[in-house]
Length: 169
Image (tube, rainbow, N blue to C red; front, side, top):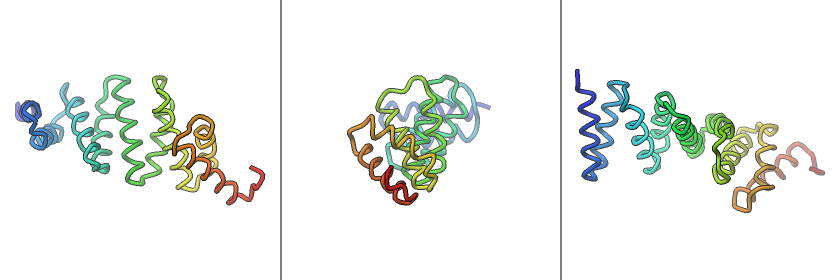
């Protein structure tokens, strides 16, 4: 009856002594067995771990689990932002585009997050050749950033104009 909770407490204990691998493995065992009040915290730690290890495909699956378990707006935002980023890195542009749009709906975005979400949305739509969806976020990046994102947005907009034979755009 208490096997699942044992995995959670064991995972927490391992993390407390900096044994991350065993901590994450026990959290995964816990998440596979049950859903309770500890599940959200476990999913957050597991998803963050896989993201930090650049195992983006696994991170997506745990961020999706976190999204389902989320009980607060901030956790929903964290999960969606994680899915957007991770999906972009594994070139799942359809999912990245979808979650970037959800992230942009958040009222608590800071400037950096807004830029990253517009970048994911614009470049994902561009890579999917859905140019009409790419134009607005790419224009936002050109007007609001001075980073590589703005430069890539300028190039992408020029390419879209070329493809669409809009040489005035």
